[in-house]
Length: 82
Length: 472
Image (spheres, rainbow over the protein chains, first blue to last red):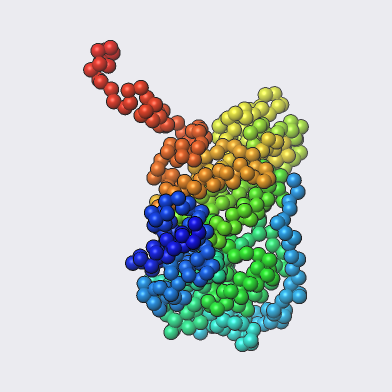
């Protein structure tokens, strides 16, 4: 199931107008496609995508969001398009 | 049960790991420090040094002077970071707005917390702070450091960062202020492999858990705060480093109701040690306090002559629930009325001690003033045992998290969710029975926990039918 969840996450991330999104919104989108996916399964799949270098974390310090690597955000916030 | 670490702790030896010699660490004279001039004009910051308290401006100037005198190969980020930081701060004072850009995607690989990206929007004017990221470092339980650890981390931060640090941030961890992106992974390696510690929590994560000194030094501790803090830190590593919560979440552990880490105000889930039997009384020691043979408050206020100890004035009449009295020469406590204010125990520690059937009280929902203002925690579990492996506590934690992750809105703290859904709904969902300890005072409406389906006829009634049987 992890592979299916990964695909659902990527479909959501690629289809979204936003360059960064909250975990909860990502989870809701996954559950729409795979209703039996549990929060833990989505977190595991998202962590795997981060470890594969496909997803990235964006942190303000107080809250964290996810994004697709290379899309919109770079390590220098003066670059890229938000 | 004796404390058992997950693995043996590494013994640090600063002399083997030091980067700077003594001479390099004290590379300036007091005269040089007195005559130090920042390369920017900083009149408002100079003013901040004139108060009666130690000033971060003085500390920063000291660090700036040391960095001026170190050689180029003794630091891996800009020499002028301290002076540029002061210069930018003066600019912000002049213009009344910040020049920090906050947040970003910088971090260490695989971790969603612990590093907070920070950049200057005046990078051309203050180039060495163009990148000025913060690294949070997990503090040990009760902040029990060794000198070797502190010296080693200070050297590391002088070398790979700005040398400026904040011990400790509001959550409790060490805050290392100002480094560049390329230094983040080497710093993480040094912390993990040399200093044998971890980075702390930030973002939508479980933040670095913090505890009071606990049973290590304090006889009031009703449970082993250090062990519970360590156990939950290890058990919830995934929650510390891989963010999936709606917002931040903090655990804090107070060993007794004195609350030395103020968990009731500073954590989403507060654990406070308590007891459910009676306060232990040593009547001979009570008599010794009354006779003046034992100094009250363990001598804590002994620098001034407060006169002869008066148990009525200083203890019994100050009890918030008036549950204490003297019967002849015996001190009597109505333990069912005790609200754990700790005043009597603190005043006469050799005569009074917490009971022996000890455990924890769990409170939920405290937070600092971000949205609705500062909020103290609400008591949820009046008493629970706290013994390793803490499965009862973990089960409770996970029930709360499950509800918060399901129902919480993005950036909604647990305390805000509790307010939004209301206390009756919240406790029903997490499976807690209503308890009098959950409220400060009885409510005007005693049916607060009743539901319409539980009441015969629901909320509606035929007033004419009622009046036919009950005259005005």
